[in-house]
Length: 487
Image 1 (tube, rainbow, N blue to C red):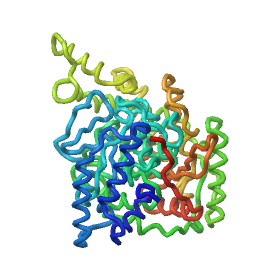
Image 2 (image 1 turned 135 degrees about the vertical axis):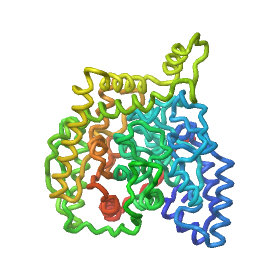
Image 3 (image 1 turned 90 degrees about the horizontal axis):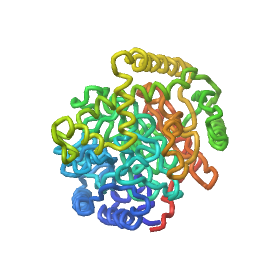
Image 4 (image 1 turned 45 degrees about the vertical axis):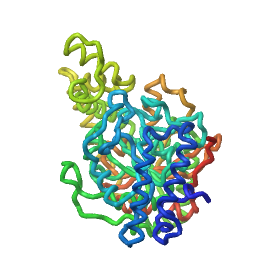
């Protein structure tokens, strides 16, 4: 196999045994990126020189025996996480030239672990979208079929894994932005419990929903990354400080006696039959492994999508008010006064989808409509959380589809916002409730396109959730290798 085809866990062992060097692995990935990124468009910024320097340093540390699991591994970061001295664009014209003066907490941690950062990854603008078509730098393309979307908003993060352009990547998940592209691109992606990973340095979309998480070619890869980044942080007031868990060590693969619920609300007419069939087959696999799988009900799940778009748009409207053409970011030229400069800068700096959500958010927060929309959505959010709490009194985990369909053609839904929003129907309830969730491939659909299954756990059950996913991965001999992409 080529070096870029191995999982991160495999590469880590090879680096520690000195079978390969970080420099060799890094060069293999950089060659892969330079050969196919023009087709996949997973990267906005590639850090060739920096990556080579980091790889040489990692090799020196490994030679001295001064390393840990992630040392020397080539990773890539979604372009909404601040990187000191490196452009952080949020895939928006508004921040197309923004260079942060500091690192996000997760970036600082990874730098301390001496990873190799290959670059910054494509995404929907300000993480608002389900297809990566809203990027100022153009859509990312699904490596399984370059005519299809990757999903979003972490489309570049998923595509980079699927195409062998990074060993592990980081994404962010506000309503499914890690899990939905993981499903459409056939990789593993995890949204941790809200607060489990610090949001410091993550450019905010919806602060009560955003969460950083890993994408990889195996459950073990994601566990390795979570071991590093899931730590408390005093710079994030929502960060959980419960002590450090050991996620990779929790992967026993034993699920005997575990109760898994399948909420019937996730299997409605809006879900393609091939997706339903794939999830039912996964349920049968869990039964064969000794788990107890039953149908259950999450009655308020049907209201989650509406509640999510009201809450997230309201928070987006507030968070994006800072981009005014004055302090930093894009400033339109030719304005006659401050008010005109403000209007022109925001009109020209933001894309259509971002402006749509800002306007929706401003509307639901306005006088006379706050109680009818935003307050009501928050009340529904509380009820959905209570629904989950009641289910988890009876079940250990939930099994659902991750996306109602496989990847669709680029351009097919971009002019239909409601159809695009419905692509998140399987993932948004998890963010509403702040729960951990992981997606991994379980089948192939029409056109040989990936189908992903979603596992959901109770708050702070991240380690146990990873183990349930690992059990499936182990039992099915699931092996995710990069797909062939023509350069």
